[in-house]
Length: 106
Length: 396
Image 1 (cartoon, helix red, strand yellow):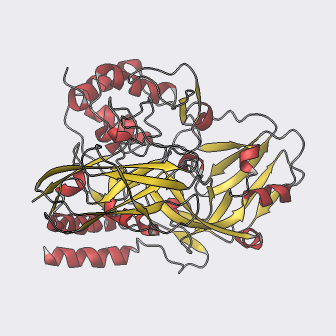
Image 2 (cartoon, chains in turn purple, brown):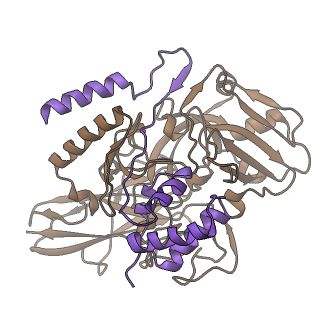
Image 3 (cartoon, chains in turn purple, cyan):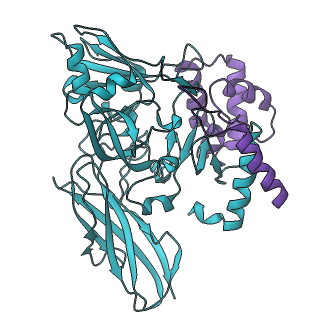
């Protein structure tokens, strides 16, 4: 564990996460790549594909346990307000997945 | 409280692993509901992860023991995923135009030639405390860590607008940052202020936070600062100011960030407001910072209860504290006054004489008599949270 920590520190220094003014007037950061594992389910691949276009999947996990009408409204907002390119059939599958895996038990 | 779930050892372990994963370009998974993780983003210390892309990071409560929130601990909240990550200050310009006599392209040096204005102000997300709403509402599930008290320095927006020269008939001023939407159908994050608000003395284009350039994730190189109003207006990585001859119609003002048009900004829990208006001034709040919830305290030993209080641009006049679940209230001592936009620390000496469970409460009132409700006021978007908080401690 100690060894891993040392490697971790060296790696983070090497990666130059913290900005530097080394390249003249350009100021840069590197954002970590988002990686989130959702619970398994029939429509998981569709959820990963479509939801990930605009946001990391922890947006799903973060929400309170929504009822079916709430998940339906949320997915509908993504399509109608934000233009997520999701077909009606996929919308239905995605809502069912979200209710089953991240929904309120009612 | 969730933060208590991390032992010191777990904390170090998580932080270490996360640093390694970050360096390798990824964050560990899986990430389960209710399990909050500390993460390290560029220029930031370990913060509570809400979401990774766009980043939403919450400040752990221990930092609120400080009068001024350090830059690396200030919360992070972006709306759309193409967040700026690289800026060349030689190329960067702040564009000012629209219904103006001149079009300006201001460099950082130009901004710094304007009169320099400095003050301390609370920066608070509209949805701070949203996870405490009952019934729960959709959106970023913040506890109370989407806030901070920061010294901002910059140029007056009014001076910049006057330099551009306002044409007759100007109504609103809109503000666009460098962040861009992931799809053309996603509305770009653009905010607006009514002209009279934009021309107020204290609205600034800030280029410094706590005397330094601000972290990229908090809006480098400049952000709008609208002290007293919620952070949704404090556009990060500000790059374009447009004076409009009519009301701004963009999504993030016309549709999002709205509150019920009622005196309390609230409606019956679970119901929809008939009419809404854009969110604006912050409600009055007080928070008990020390002790934290579920802490153990020794009987018959002096303990100083400490907290913070602030309101939307009016000084805190009084903070009342109760150590017996609201039966008896006594006045707390207020700390250093850093002006009407800053939070004030408050202190309350306490020596619990008997063992048992105690419920501590604090209630602030500002200089125009605004205070806090004992029951959470509800609105569908989860804004304006300012319920009198309760902290339970065990005295033994």
